[in-house]
Image (tube, rainbow over all chains, first blue to last red):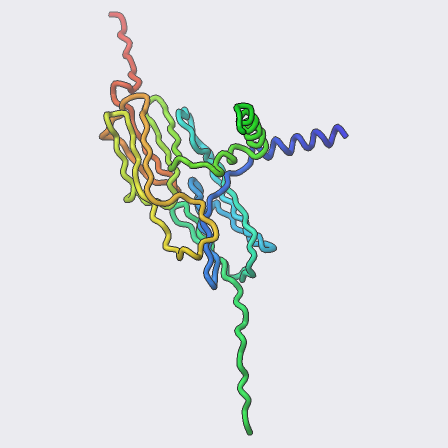
Length: 126
Length: 141
């Protein structure tokens, strides 16, 4: 029993030390797509990972924290990894997901699967 | 009715929650200063970093006042989205301004700014009077 208690404690410490920041997002939806636009300040486009699995979109951006030998005299933000995940309620065409990254703003476009429109079948007369 | 004790209890609860969820909790539900700024200092200069993703350098105005005050002003352009299409809106848009005082004067002519992955970096070399000076030691004749 003691061992399991130690394990829990270790897990907890890891979680607080390496917990990434929450990336802030704006999201909007049209008839054909859902667009998510998020801020990843300090993150390079090469260090962004996007995954869509079982209706959950996960975005991770890793950032190197390196302040060198300089002394921090005012600190309002930390240079660390940013992460966010969203559960998507619409049916998405996963192969059509597109993402772009410009000036630390990531934009992901999720195309909504369109219902097949009812089609009137003409009857040919002999 | 709320009394001092109720506020003390709320503060304690918040401290406990922050221990569990980390300091990110502070960013929810309350007004934020924007942009967030870090100031770093070494012997020769200051480095001011401001989180400004999506803002280009042309839309930012940096002023150094009275030799030791830095002011950052600018505007982040709103995205043109139909009002009824929004699902979620978390990012700060529109005008922003921050200003603060440094601990000593800077060489205004040598201030340089650049944008690096959505973080504005302003390098402000300290004024000559505040630079470390190497003292030559005279050798005895």
